[in-house]
Each structure stands twice: as structure tokens, then as C-alpha cells.
Image (tube, rainbow, N blue to C red; front, side):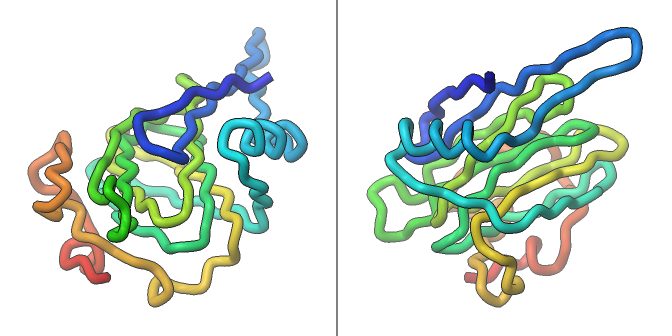
Length: 176
């Protein structure tokens, strides 16, 4: 059974996945609909159904985000490589706007994050290559329907373990 851990951010949960390993390799269950529904309902009082799976493959020093929207829950997992991920409360009407927390996700550590609506996330690839997987509770409708904050927005004071990341124009400039 997957273990659930609270984070310092309201609504953000960390799951610790179980790995089974033998001489053939490893096996990990990333998602079990009934188990996750029960955990999310118990911990957050919410019913969340995931409708889309996506992944992004990136190379070392690529930084993606801070992106999100006001309706989508995301369940994020590292399938290979190593990520430094930051989750930020982007709800400007919240007293906790700008509060953030960082995490390290790897296939080996088996950590997975549940990110609620109105929270953005950004991640930096620390390994040579990495694959980032996320389940979404809403269908992706394009970046025009999302908020974007510059990864080094001075309001957040996020610490990044890099000085000059590889970013897109969207992530370098930021737009809301």
C-alpha cells in the first residue's frame, strides 16, 4: 500500500511508492484508482478523478515552469532520472500566496506529489536525462489557459541549485 505524507503546503500530499525488486529488476505500481480516491478523500475531503496522462523528457539543467491553473489536480512522478521540483501556492487571494516547498523526485526514491489547483510547479533536471510523468484531473487546454510565473520571480524567493538553467521563452519571461 502506498504511504501518504503531508507537506507544509495545504492540499499538497507526498506519496511514498513501494518498489518490488529481484534479480530481474524492479516493479512499482504508480497509481491505483480506488486507493488514491480513498486517500485523497480521507486526507483532503476531495473527490479527484484523473482523466489524462502526460510525460515530458528533458536533459540536464532544463528548468520547466512555474505553471498551473485554477482547476487541475496533478499527480507527478519521476519515471527516470532526477528532478528538483518546487510547488508554489499561486492563489493570489490566499494568505499563503507565494509559499513554496521543494522536493527531490527520482525513480529510486519512489516519491510522488499530488498538486492541487491554484498551485504551480516547476522542476529542474539534475541528471543527464529524465522523464517526468503527470496525471491530470482536467484535459490540457493549452498554455493560454494556464498561469505562468517566472521561475525566479522575486516574490517567491525560490532557491534553485543552478545559476543559468535552460528555459523556454515562456518560463524565462513569465506571464500571468
